[in-house]
Amino acid sequence: MESSFSPIEQMLNFRANRQKDFPLQEIMLTRLCMHMQSKLLENRNKMLKAQGINETLFMALITLDAQEDHSIQPSELSSALGSSRTNATRIADELEKRGWIERRESDNDRRCLHLHLTPKGNDFLRQLLPPQHQSLQLLWSSLNDSEKSQLEGIIRKLLNRLDKMDEEQVIASLSR
Image (cartoon, rainbow, N blue to C red; front, side):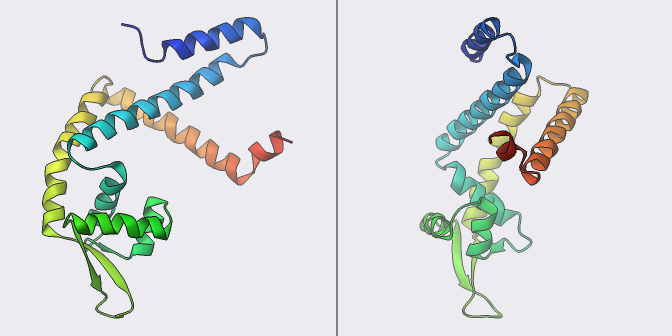
């Protein structure tokens, strides 16, 4: 069976044959990572859609579930999701409409609002997570424990390098 990456690989090999200083391996690895991330998201979105939810709502529920008291301020949710406060309000509206969260005034400060995971939201998550976990276990079962640890180490090493390049503004200086 031909891989979904084969057309990209063929194009890169063709380009490398035409241009001798073409950094084939570096570009191939980058494109493989990007392609895999796209496939991971596609797979996850299909599963979430089949369960009646999208990635944004799912991550909001997971964020609430990860809080000690299953409660978070809208501004904290916005930061956790990397979205605007306006978008976080829309997300909270949708979660509230579905009965998965409720808005409550803070016990300490009535001006402060908290989003709370409801029992219905908690039940939905408990139903949603097992198929998600099974899908991930199926995917990663193609690697043994040693390979998983090795891959995690490599990915973390590359992520640290990307973070350092951001800090040093390497990309901007190379583009000048």
